Image 1 (cartoon, rainbow, N blue to C red):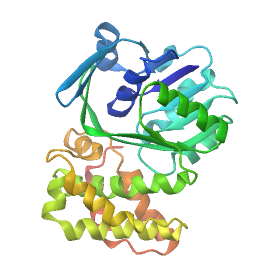
Image 2 (image 1 turned 90 degrees about the horizontal axis):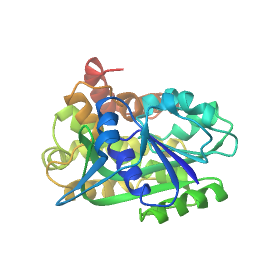
Image 3 (image 1 turned 45 degrees about the vertical axis):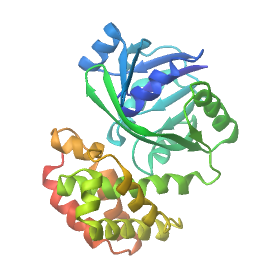
Length: 295
């Protein structure tokens, strides 16, 4: 199978490095100094005390060619449509598309702009691009969760299995995406608002954590998705994470980079207003962060 991984940051870089060990034809897409380093030296993965490097075909999207049977979009939600447009000529109606960007509407975005087979998905991982050519992954957590059209789901599962990457293919993929989203939406907002790691926010502002999680669960319920049990689970997860583990949105704000404030915080405010669900804490935090938001 010919596979494209679009975006080689913390998520895409780790996935692509592992997929490169399989027999599938793989092309990774990145840009700038990160891409240049990967092309010259390969991509280095640092997992706690373990580190390893791998070389694979890495290019800019402008140099995409041929037809891909599977495209994994590992870019931020705000880059999804632009990335699709650049690789669209290498996609046909049989291509399987899957976005691992944070958010709950990425599959819907792809379905609006493409006639290809679109799966919904998310990924659990603590990782980031430490510097050009280097991805740092913290802890043992990794799980790719995806689903939708049966044959396409099985195809992607075989791909991840071949790479030894843990994966799940639940029947109710929408609920599974929200189960991840409630955690990342809440703690991306909280870590950025308080400028603290996930665990530090949990330890110093537990009431705010639980309140924000409850607001997000309320919006999900209004959309017919029951994730009430995830509030306690999210609190437990936050309490057990490494002391310095934070969120990509927090890091983006710290480094004055484009961020996912709209998809992770603004989306809850907007959906709450649309469905008559009050989200006062999320509104307050979103309003406070908005002046620092980089589009």
